[in-house]
Amino acid sequence: MKKNLILSVLILGTIGLLNGCASNPSNPNSGAQTGAVVGGLTGAAVGYNTSNHNRGSRAVVGGLLGAAAGGAIGNSVDNSNPPPQQTSGWQ
Image (tube, rainbow, N blue to C red; front, side):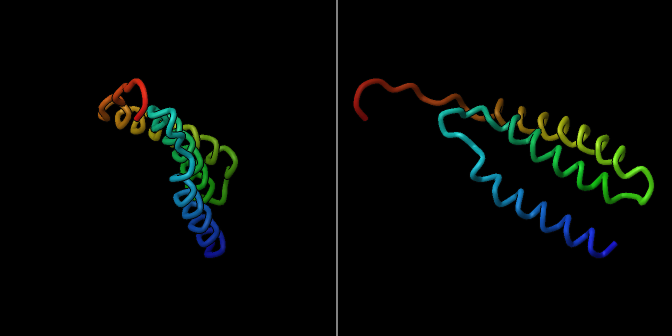
């Protein structure tokens, strides 16, 4: 159990650190996509480690719920951000 917890913390920490590199500056509305991916991975890790029975199905359910929640949160962040300013010519 302790080994699984340490492994999960390491995986989630790595995902959190790499999350800053995942955004594409040319696509400012990528919060929903990033949130869905991070939420899905986090939910799958949590679902896998909740019990010793039916780990696979718990990971799938946790991943689906995490992806839905992360996508919804990322979508609300995208909607709350102002649209990018359009400029023309040299900057």
